[in-house]
Image (cartoon, rainbow, N blue to C red; front, side, top):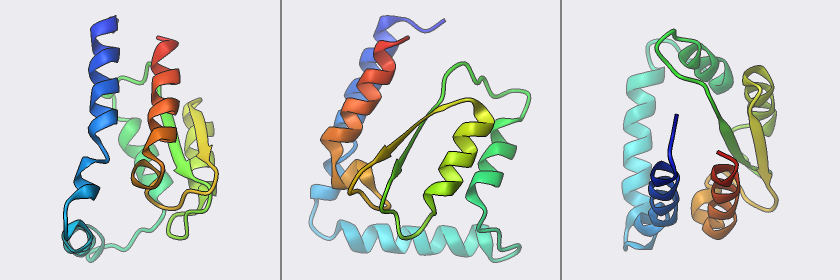
Length: 124
């Protein structure tokens, strides 16, 4: 069981999530990181079905699935929102589609993402 302190810590973490995007040159760092991860992860076996990979990872016997929140930018040009709909449906999770947000809603509209996470945590 998770206590109130856990929810408060998660809220504080969510509030700080947008801080890196305020640093000069963060886009170049993110691009380099993403390119290296794609090269390492996808080069041997390209698998762009992110939802299927996440479901497989979450179905591992040692992963607790007591509550799951999926957040997706409704205007994401990179990963189709249908992937998150499928993932949320498979897990019985709540899906928040953030209107007007793209691939990084936590950076584009951090207040809306923080509000969604806080509302979700308030239900624990």
